[in-house]
Image 1 (tube, rainbow, N blue to C red):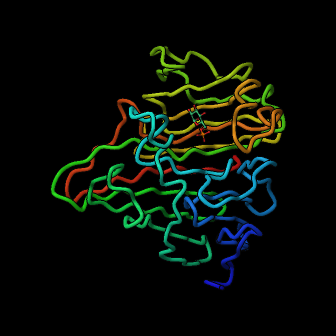
Image 2: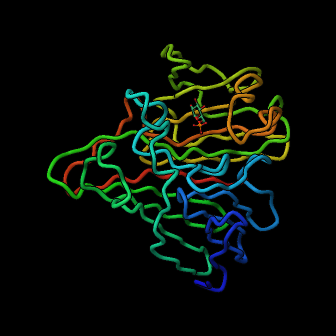
Length: 283
Ligand SMILES: O=P(O)(O)OC[C@H]1O[C@H](O)[C@H](O)[C@@H](O)[C@@H]1O
């Protein structure tokens, strides 16, 4: 099915549907399952999204790479039987709109609330995501409260970035932020972050822009309506335990996730909306 000159709907061999975007400005893939973008290649540049070589694109499983949407909670829930990172990343979203102008292709999707288990999310609400695909990628995740009482949630745009060498990669722009690491802290980040061991840091009071310095160039990651972010690399031992992840792949990726977690938890009042935004580009 074709939506505009640059956008068509395609399907993997395993049956998962995705928007296949090939515009003058970029190439991208966005899966309906999880509303998950897995490829964003600005014309003439490298892919900004990393996906595991072991990924097998199965129904009901989040793709290991790109940008899984963690909603309406980030990480492990207090009720340990509930799915890690919420359930939005495993549901097939509804395609809402595709538009194309000379500066961007815009694709929006919504989470069909009919499919949501009310024990996990008993609130009257709307969740939409818009992808603005131009020379840079912008992702806008909007929660709207359609009920009579406020609700609170944590969430993240869990972006996987590529690097050819994690040991020669640093993240700049977190200096001065506070972080929790493996449940301990808060500590203050004093310098750029390098990688030499398992990294799983939840930052609060983080500046709105970070730069990832890789051997391939500098990736700029921006956030709006978010003062928290998560930096993750599983390193050797955890890599062996992860699904759809090769043992050595930790050497070629990292996650820097635009979030609303800890003290940055979002409360949405009746009739109000909140939009978490991340922007990603090669600098
Ligand atoms: O394997 P997943 O459920 O996709 O989670 C992958 C990772 O996500 C985040 O970055 C968390 O901070 C990590 O603790 C977790 O391992």
